[in-house]
Each structure stands twice: as C-alpha cells, then as structure tokens.
Length: 249
Ligand SMILES: Nc1ncnc2c1ncn2[C@@H]1O[C@H](COP(=O)(O)OP(=O)(O)OP(=O)(O)O)[C@@H](O)[C@H]1O
Ligand SMILES: [Mg+2]
Image (spheres, rainbow, N blue to C red):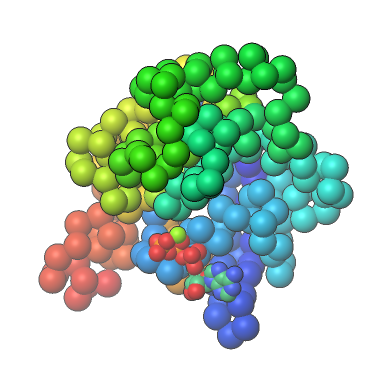
C-alpha cells in the first residue's frame, strides 16, 4: 500500500503541494490528474525519495520514506518501478542494458544468460521482439521507447509502478496499446499503480480510482464513476472543458 500523508512542498515562494493525502490500496490503479505544472511529477518523485517533503510523509509497505535510512530507501526503490515522463532511457546503452538497470538497483546480480533471458521475457510482456534488446533508444519510435521504459520499470519484479504520462505524445492507437499494457500488467502481475496522465479516456479504462490535484490540494479522490458524475465545477471543467465549464469554475 502507498500512503501519502499530509504532504507539503514548496520551492521558494512556489507552494506546489499543500497538505496532500491519499492512499493507493494493494493491487489498485489510481489515475492522478491535474493541470500542467500543478505538481504531479513532484508528487511521484516524493514516493521514491527523489524529493524530500517540507511536511508530511510517504509510507510504502509500512516504511516511511522520509525517515528511511539509505538501506531502507534502496529496498523501497527496488519494489517501486518508475516510468519517467519522456521515458528517460539512456541513449548510450542498448535497450537490453537499459532494461537490466531495472532489475536491481545495485546492478544485475543474475548471471549473464539469466539477465538476457529476463530481458527477452520483459520485452515479450510489452509486445516487443527480443531482437530489440540489441538496438539503441535512438533507433526506436516514441511508442517503442515508452514500452522499453515500462519494461525497465517492472524488470526487477517491482510490486509498484509509477507511470508519469505514459501515453503523452503518442498517436491514439499507440496510446491505447500502452493503456492495455498497463491494465495487463496490473491484472497479470498484480502490481499496484499510480498513473499520472492527461489522457482521461484511457485512464478511465484502467484506473479504479481517480485523484485530481488542483492548486496544491487534492480536489477530488474517489471511484471513477463518482469522478465522471461529480458536480464540482472544477472537476466538470477538467472532465469536459468548454466555455461554459471554464466560466462556471
Ligand atoms: N526541482 C525543482 N526545483 C524548483 N521547482 C521545481 C522543481 N521541480 C518542479 N518544480 C516546480 O514545481 C511545479 C510543479 O512541477 P511538476 O513538474 O510536478 O508539474 P506537473 O504537474 O508534473 O506538470 P506537467 O503536467 O506539465 O508534467 C512547477 O511550478 C515546477 O516549476
Ligand atoms: Mg509532470
């Protein structure tokens, strides 16, 4: 379970997160929405301890990230796969080497052959041919890069996956393929996920809960249906932007 408890974070005068709390239950998929620049990526980075909060805490599997020592933080990071906004593959490493990075934060402890087998297995799970392992990120399309980034995130059998805009910049068909993949991973592997996205339609297909971050606060959290039917003008404006909803909010 991921618990976000009263998280606050400012950068100088810029208050990004202001007392944010929610939980993601075991096996659940939470879609995190919010306008650009509201702090969705900042929030995700707190979960793996890349950013320290000013106040509040993140607890993953009962371990407080804020109070964790280096060893505990590494243990949590091994359980949490992170698909960075824009994929963030290493250009100088092959696809196979990129995926191996996800297997173990201390480096691949498996033997070479076992490593290669796991890379092939991960590529298969994201619908890529094993020969892709020998290519370099620059040789892949944007959609393929996203799939490799996702393969890297779960290559170490992580129980948690954090996706930061996994479908942004993809054509509708590839966005749908990635969404299906996320759903498949959560069903097949039973992982618990948070998906930051602006892609509402695809998020509604996979998420069981929605959170809307707005002006530093959680404006809405709850089941998908409740979100779609909410009469909160800010939620309405977000679900179906129009001149009317924008003026009403
Ligand atoms: N390391 C940092 N130092 C200072 N300010 C930062 C830092 N990281 C993020 N910010 C600021 O925090 C705010 C939230 O940024 P964040 O990247 O989380 O937005 P976002 O909701 O992910 O937006 P988008 O949907 O465009 O990706 C922005 O104003 C950004 O400038
Ligand atoms: Mg972002």
